[in-house]
Image (cartoon, rainbow, N blue to C red):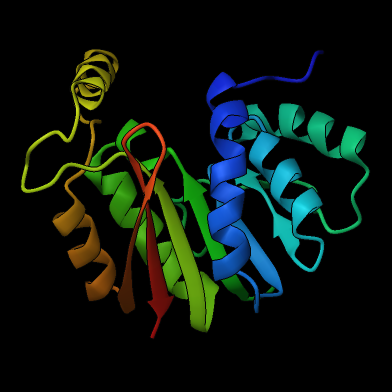
Length: 198
């Protein structure tokens, strides 16, 4: 089996790291939701050696993540955790003081977003930082033609998926016990949203 490669990860990992290294400067352990291929996990763990990085994904993706992890040989990168956000409580042996998720919420329907938010509220310590990366709409409007095309493609494969509205995302996290700390513009019409667990 060859390591899975996502070209988008290669394009955005440097920009994401530049943001996360500031937000996670005082953190110790990060739970990544929806680690995909595992590329981000390796890159972030390598560039932020003070962090213990915990990747997580559904079972079919775990072998690919493990290939990346083994090749990297990083002491601060844990074996990937099998995690279905809908299965509560999550199978965690301790709380985390940071969490990260990239390009996940637009690939799923709102019920899975709700499940992720509910799980994160239980998985994070008070004061923990949560960073969420991806495209978001503003007041129900697309911020670029590229995002409009992405949304159409997503809905063709899954009518329940699609780019989420920024205000709705913030509201749901605030309801779950998070404070919104702001957004950061990222390349290719993406945003990095930052929250703190109350």
